[in-house]
Picture 1 (cartoon, one colour):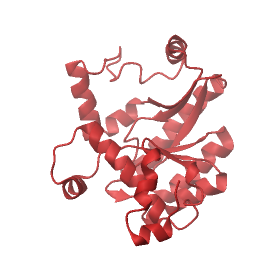
Picture 2 (cartoon, rainbow, N blue to C red):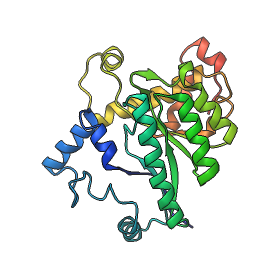
Picture 3 (tube, one colour):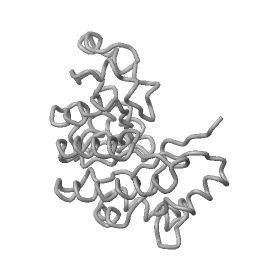
Length: 245
């Protein structure tokens, strides 16, 4: 039996720099400075997150991991301006593709999508799945404050349906306004907030999207997938539009 790890992040310096003013990279710097996370030889936090070559394979061997499915660390390109997001997503995906080509029995890939531009995201998903054998894509709970059940994002999910590949929904801290409204201003840890947002995101998406993802919910995965049925039973409208996962 093989051990396959499906949430195995990496970083590239250009995207670290592009997100340097954001909360996530600031948190990584804090965690590195306080020793919560280790710091690598090149200053990356966590250590080893820049490498998807031989050092990573050695770490996999040491941990008993047969296969990793690589994905870019959040927030990936999702907080960036659309033009820059398109450029850097392609850069990240090409890096994964090169690693998978070099080590096809050990590595797979989830595509990074430039979600501020959904049409470009759909095209990038098609490119990586069709040309490079990627297994799907990883995206996060909201994009610059806009949630995934918005019609703006439908081209991405329609393309995933066409290609018959999964979308992995990764946690992301809620926008401040949503956190205050939904959680009563309670101070939440990063981990609490991200888990709550993951559940909210996939539940809301199941109950709002009309193009087939309700029928194909098995193709949407998240940290909190086991909780999704409860998010489809909270109102008569939701009951009418959703079925149990």
